[in-house]
Image 1 (tube, helix red, strand yellow):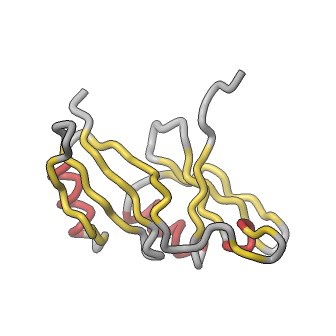
Image 2 (cartoon, helix red, strand yellow; image 1 turned 90 degrees about the vertical axis):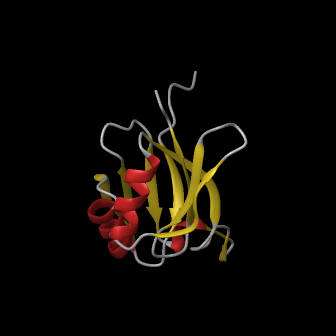
Length: 129
């Protein structure tokens, strides 16, 4: 039986720059950083989160020499925050790009899209619980 989601993968052009963004800009923690041949397997996560984000070198996401995932995609990964305005204001002050600023969603919550330095796009929504 499956017990939990371990990670979702995001392809980045520079793992060290991505690690810096997720840890120092977003305030997440580094969970795994292990060598894998010419590259590394690195995961990061918001503090207290069970699920992790794997920041992958493009070479790790190839089949028969062709990239199946590339930097700069919208992978449909969503994150939740408690206070959308405060979170977005804080991240924008740190230079995080929001191609869609906080917007009223059809289900009644606020939602926004933000990007990492490679243009990978994520959805952010507010959880009032």
